[in-house]
Image (cartoon, rainbow, N blue to C red; front, side):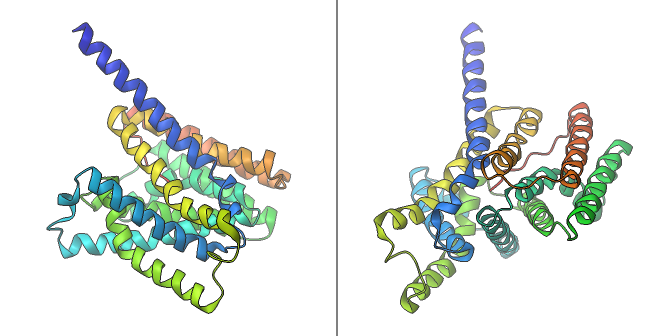
Length: 303
């Protein structure tokens, strides 16, 4: 029994390290994507998809998980296709936001994702919400209104990231694949298109993979491991930690992004933005407290 307890403790510790590592890498990713300039967001996404696919082919081969992809139904592949489109939209929007001075907007998008998932559960899955959950959604809606009025424009980056990733999570919930074969399957659909796009850019002279030095080319290649490593760490953490623990740790990612945007990137934070951010945080406190009490805290991998 003591040895069994020590094994569980070691498993828990490794789970914490894996989960924190994943969320920290995601949270610090705004430091990476601007390094890919002069590649724009679309080219960066294409390299991210292409090199992630090549990396996942190696991982799934070493892990001997090819069997997970055999015999999948057409319906499953349709869901994987939908997920691929959604994650491409999410990745493109995120990379554009981190390279155009909108890191705080991106952070708010990932703060809001769990709340969007709850709304989707009501609209799509016909689930019924508790009163406290409606309060959290009301606070989040108020935040959107405040941010829209304060800036004079709809916070589209926040909404696109939250909705696209919320829908992606809904789709992934219905796909019977864990992160390794799931990411590989998505790569099968997006990867060939990304590779053709990259080759087309290079042939036309608009691509940046060549002509900007070895360092730039290696950074584009690094987009693959920068994507895959946090996902693999997240998968390891998810197997070793309770769902509620992961639910709380997930906010490390947007918090680090928010701090990067404010402290490092020096993005402007007028009063209206602080009020909007505070309303989002209040919504998350209410939502997380209720979810922990009910034992239903949703957990999502991010990007």
